[in-house]
Length: 76
Image (cartoon, rainbow, N blue to C red):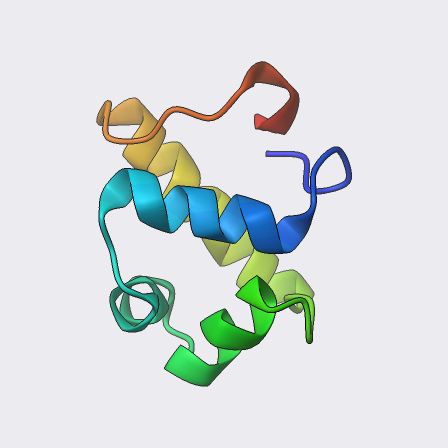
């Protein structure tokens, strides 16, 4: 997942949309607050290195389970 190629807020929203998760559900999965996910989607903040690593690991897990499909440029 390469967040440089695409707007990070749009990427977070796309991940949630594909997995049919609310911001609160995604936050719970990543171990962050609802407000954090909300700020990411609104472009008010970017994830810390730890949060980004958790998001990458979560996306890899969902992709391997066939629940998430990200375009080639966003896989890492």
